[in-house]
Amino acid sequence: MAVWARWRCLLSTARAVELPRRLRSRGCAARACREFAPLAVLPAGRELALCRLQAYRQVSVGSCSPPDSAEDGSVSSPESNLPSVQQEQAKAEILPDLNAKVLDEGWDDIPPSSALEVISEEEAVQIIAEPLLPIQSSTLRDYVDHSETLAKLVHLGVDLSQVEKRQKAGQLLLTLDFEKDVKKILLFLKDVGVEDNQLGQFLTKNPYILGEDLEALETRVAYLKSKKFGKSEIAQMVSRAPYLLLFSVERLDNRLGFFKNELGLSVKKTKDLVIRLPRLLTGKIEPVKENLQVCQIELGFQRNEIQQIVCKTPKILTASKKRLKQTFDYLHNIMGIPHHMLTRFPQV
Image (tube, rainbow, N blue to C red; front, top):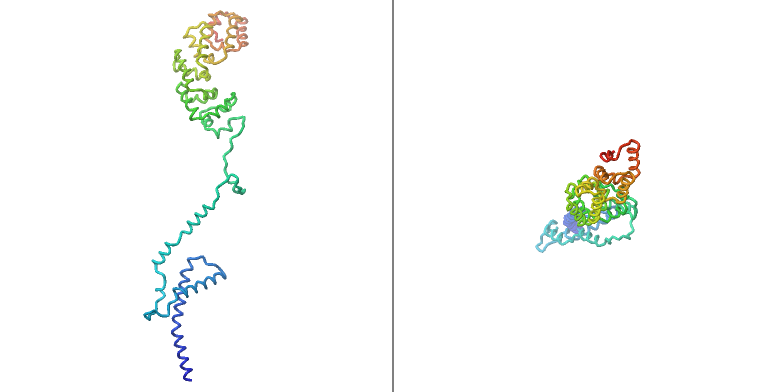
């Protein structure tokens, strides 16, 4: 009986000593779970229970469980077994940057784009492609969005619908570079005297000048100046006859010589004639010759009378032969107006 009482006393003492240790151990485990739970993505259900159990075991076995005794016989507190702030910072510095590594690996895994790469319909719909240049078209309008030259010419007032009616004019404009080919011609025309508001109309009638050599154009202007044409007179002639500067110096010289010799005009009168009607230098010469013969042979005017008529009304040289005959027949044969009166007032 004494032995039994002694054994019960020892058991109670052992339980009393063990109870505080268990409480401290459990409290440390709970704190560890509270500290580590926010740092990880917590699983759900059965995995949550296993995760908690594993964390509890690790904390209980690890640094949170105090030793039974120290060398000096004292018991260490749970706080003394936790890692210090300096240790945690050192570990954080050692850890690699997982995000950067994943990013680098992601870039390495992206294959280079290929024109033959198969894409989904959704991706294909999102692709914005530039409109293709038409291989063949009957209008320059289809090329305006692709050609800087055409776009700027339209801005100047050029009527492309009229230009494309001229033989090979559209092909010429499509081959020209605005900065390299067109700009210098525009500056030249302005220097000659063509006004800014006339450039569009001028180029609509004569787009071919944009393909001319600048030096050749300057040579033709210099020739006109050598014939005593003033700058304002040259500007007037070029504006009224846009094709004038397309003709060579030789042709211009021959045409001036023809009117001077054929009509017996002086240099001044010849110059005044072509200034008033510069188309005489650019048009065909055959209709002019035919009208001179009609006036002299069929209508009966003398050479000196023809000179006066032409100087007063140069358009007679380019008028229709049929119209000349009908007008003369009505005025002379029906109304009875004599030749000398028609010579003084050829405007009728």
